[in-house]
Image (cartoon, rainbow, N blue to C red):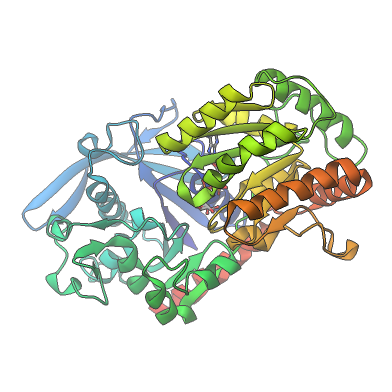
Length: 485
Ligand code: ADP
Ligand code: GLC
């Protein structure tokens, strides 16, 4: 199949969270399975080009309307190792900034333009995909455009698959965008794009995509209810027959303690995990200027600091925990300034127990995974979550709230040995429940060291590679292609 990945992020070029990891890893896996995969993403100001990039020989004309055309340049990075191509849309009007999101309140225009440009580039270059795989709200208008203003073109048999990575962000914007993209006025109804007097890009995709997926089976179920449906649960129930929850995999070439060059010592099995983890713990403590105590449990966090992640609950209980318990906390993250400030204050008040790095740091994120004993993800909701899988892969026990992909991937300490427990789960969305979970972790570490080692070995043995999940995407693509044949 010819598959076009329409995405705002793609590792290593652009990443703010798990979406960039997920799309690139899935793309590589599909390409390895023999499909012709191309990615199309904006050429943001922060992306560094390399010498082998090839410009498309002519300017690419994006036909916004019969009287308005924008001319862009498209660059292609041939990825010889993975046999896939990444196209970069150069258009400085929208993408000169280094920022991926939040550019002068014009994101809906920027990404709406990206969708149209991707499809017009296909038409102009004559490469007609079987499937346009659109990721999250930024690509939400691609299925709508395919069904309307580009319907009577060579793309008429192209199917669209839309993946919900996070339903909280929907692209709810003034309806003027419809005029800019010349979308027909009849689309502005409640069973198309309209939503509370505005245009909702995610909703448009949910109505127009040939097939819909999301990134874990539990999240696929959760978003059909009012708590996690963010006002679109009725649309998802309406399309329930076309909605599939497929667990993300992880790229084991990048996240693998046996080969990872960004950590202090490599390890791969039950024989060398104890010494490998101890060396990485010391390196992490040194990097974060914490006392180098091998026998003190280290709790790690790497996250975007937003409401979704439930880390405000952690900030609520930390003063008590740090005052009483023998533990260290290492946090790497950035996001809401008020939450950043709370963690900075905690680090100032407990310098021997709590170390905080505000910012985005890929190298440090690998060391946190390798050097921690436990990894905290108390998310209010978590569509899939990659960090708990990275953690298990590094023999670090995740402490997670039982929601979305976290519930699908972590098995609680209380599970039978046959079920191979790998971490600690809690349910109530409240700081007290997180506190209880951390107490259980401390008990596991100090009072049941044999269990701790057993869980760590179980975690290390988990297989979260993409092999199974990529096959499930292939099936969804096949169904979608049959629909539009
Ligand atoms: P989400 O996509 O909601 O942020 P995931 O768990 O799916 O959650 O993915 C998060 C990804 O982003 C992981 O690869 C994680 O290491 C990375 N990440 C998040 N914040 C940072 C940060 N401050 N520095 C480095 N990497 C980060
Ligand atoms: C989103 C979700 C996260 C998921 C990632 C990749 O950012 O918040 O749970 O793992 O997308 O699908």
